Image 1 (tube, rainbow, N blue to C red):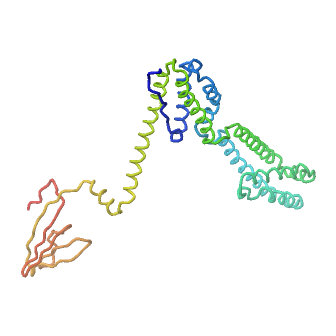
Image 2: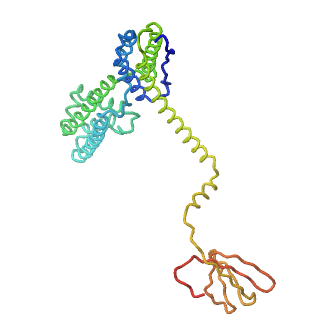
Image 3: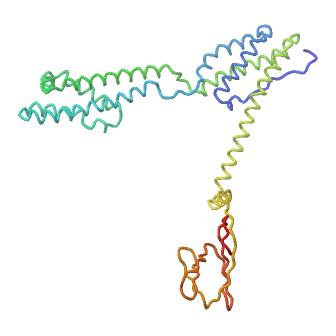
Length: 335
């Protein structure tokens, strides 16, 4: 080792790596160093510190999507809306069937309108749940009010609403508990502690080769540098690709709309045309414009069938020269 040039470990720009790339890189560093006996190479202290940070790696996971219980809660809210509607439907039936019992009906109606009417118009789900909760609290506390609901046969409808509301509240608590168990640390914070641990290991390794000249560090250095080079190359390719993509998008965004339209149209197939030239006596024809076509008529005013879709016109003293362009057809027109 004394006759060898001092080796250096190639660094990777950690902050430029994608989250899962960074996790993979750190895991590979740990694997490589561990396979070369860190205790023998006098780097076991800093290596153990890096290994102690590995629980942080597990927190650098793929971002969480919607909670699996959210869909169930959403469906239960729709059921709740149906049950609230059924309660008001029953109220309308009661109003027709028990018109003589105005006091009970009025009290029930007032209570329903106070808490459940226009429930969907609430600003958020918390307000909706709180209204339903207060609706049942008032019924449970007021024995007289509860009796009126029972006498008017609301019990079955209220039980359905109470049950679905209880399910919504329970699942809401389960979602909160489950979300609280997810990692709360931000990705930059997690990365920072791991980057420091990796860098400390590399520095210790570079010092160890100076302190222990009798040990051969080259195989360990070679493997770590190959690993770092692979990640640096992958990062360079991605940066180059993103740069080319950004330049292309910038070029497209700065083009004039007419230029883009020309390029689009130029890629379409252009039909072939036959060219025919007519030399007509001015005194024997009249021309009129009709829908973008020039109809050539003879002196008797009859159409001679030579409607021109695309034309060029040249006039001199005696004649009009018209050049007719018609789309090519496999059938000859006889001219």
